[in-house]
Length: 318
Image (cartoon, rainbow, N blue to C red):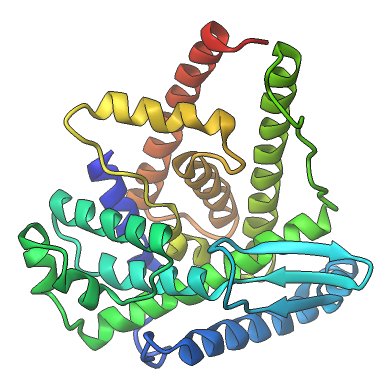
């Protein structure tokens, strides 16, 4: 997985356009908020100009909430007072920090340091930039630290990745609203076999809703004429690096999906890229190297899902 993961991270360079963005001081919350507001404003203008009437009407009813408290995952809400899409500041900070850190990745060891940095942000809610984190990360990440400060081209690529991630996140949440997804109720306890099965079925439905919202985001970007922007969201999907027993680690991560609200990130990324390849192919012949990477990931996902299905058959109480 390490080589494939690093190749996927490099996909963002396919769509980055140096010179199209200005560098921000990302430590400042105001800069992150401005990035969300400006990106979503441009995206919504594009939606109003190019989308079907149903999407235009839905988007016009949405209130954007750039929240500074709470979790780090974008969410959509529908209440009697209206519809809201929430994009937390912590999500933006994590996205730009990872995008900037990944600009320095050269080896598998670098990828491990970056994933540890992601875990640190997820666990603590920290918004510190990679330079500050690496100052405290120890000698194992010293080589990564030495590659800062980033040059202007790398900073612009990272910013383009942030812009693409914000756009995808907004459209994903809009997809939940478009399909009228409702919260899936789960049993209050799982002490009985019946409730255990009900819980597993409910979580499976929740994961399916995430796939449906992902597809809406991918296809909407295609309808807007920008299917390639999906490729620049790779920092969203970085999986844990393999350890001394990579097969066991991968199996543990994949099997944990059955009790997770969101699908295993590598499974989502494989489906997103596969759908994107279909959309790109409608316009022109995709780069052969890009097609090969996506086909490899798609093949890996199919084999991994077979493994999960076999495990479910032997371990599931249902």
